[in-house]
Image (tube, one colour):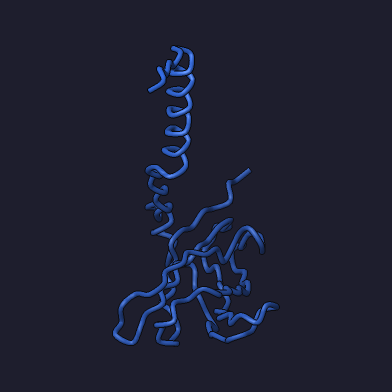
Length: 154
């Protein structure tokens, strides 16, 4: 049997390669940090909640450009208070026929796309959903205002 000799440099290079591959694997497939919890209603926002009213809320079904079913929740939000709202988000909870939650999504109805909501103003909103669970009961989801932010006074 021939005598096999491995140089110390080969051992160091081999160990370094194993460590690098192990580190890459751990970073890629290892534990992921928990997502940050969504913002909650502040005391100020809770006090203002009664000044925001959802109205004319209804549901319709459409088809996307890729022939996928899209459920749309349409409605209006009215600001009956005296502050300008810069962001309002609602949580939409879809349920199955037994009343169990099947899908929950938090979406903005005031803010990013349609600007602020001034006192006394009413704005329409459209919430498209294309990934609702098949077990959904086809009923209107529960809509809950989950966050309110106000425009800062100059």
